[in-house]
Amino acid sequence: MTLEDLRVFVAVCRAGSLSSVARDLGCTQSAVSQHVKRLEKETGVALLERRPRGVVPTQAGRILEEAAAEGISGLDLAVRRLHDLLDGHSGQVRVATGATTVRHFMSDAVVTFRRRHPKVNLDFRTVSSGRGSFDALTDGTLDLAWITIGPPVRGIEQRTVAELPWLLAVRTDDPLAARTHLDAADLAGIPLIRLPPNSTSAVHLDTACTELGVRLRHEPSVADWDTALLLAELGVGRAVVPAVPGLPMPGEGGLRLVPVPGLRPLPVGWAVRRWDALSPPARAFAGTVVECRVAAAG
Image (tube, rainbow, N blue to C red; front, side, top):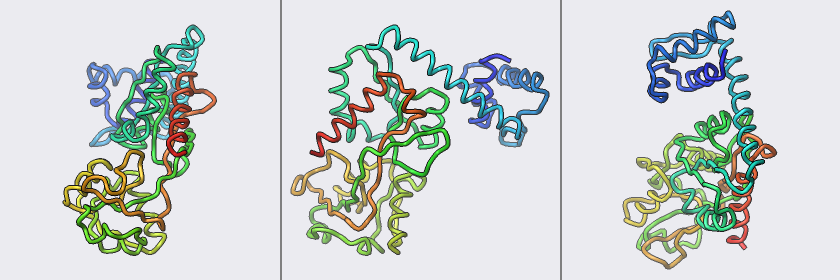
């Protein structure tokens, strides 16, 4: 049993496919299968169940996957910390972001951090889902993930940095643009541009409305908040969006943002595997983002 056997096995369990892991690693499916077979031979149990559309871990496989992922993550973290001991002023911080995160939440922090830590490389990676961010944090391929805070996730620590009020984005010539605010009930029946249905922020908005007995009527979804704002400004539709930093001020341009104070705000912030195990550069960057956020809010 080798470390590479375990790494490949964890990757197969998460991908649910031998062939996709082979493509990612640039090897043959047979080579991937050999890693799994060695583990099965040494443990004496079947670790994967073959199905028509891929593979899933058996009960024994899930036990090994969980233990292996934990051990690999710990080893990777230890190696990074050893590098930090050699030179605490350099290194790399790997951050998962959404499409609009850096622009709205981190632009000032990136400039400040680079001035303070010029030898540290910031590596921003787009991850398609919160689950993907959590998996990457667990296996050690990411240090930090900026997320919409959601329910507890085993093995992940979440920390709220800001709670964002909701706004209705409309063109300035829209009948609703003259309102100083809207009640949540005013949203019922209004066709709304929405974020992808499986996104945490979309789920949070739907839940906040449901708590107040409001059912939203949705038009086709878009990929991110900025696209929803652009479509609203073009008059293509209306959109309920969180009050992210950097939005237009009232009276600027062709967009009007009407507060909806009755809706429960959207919590956003950091997710990490363990705060006490973050490398010094990662801890410094996370703190810089919070610092700049507080300064902007003040």
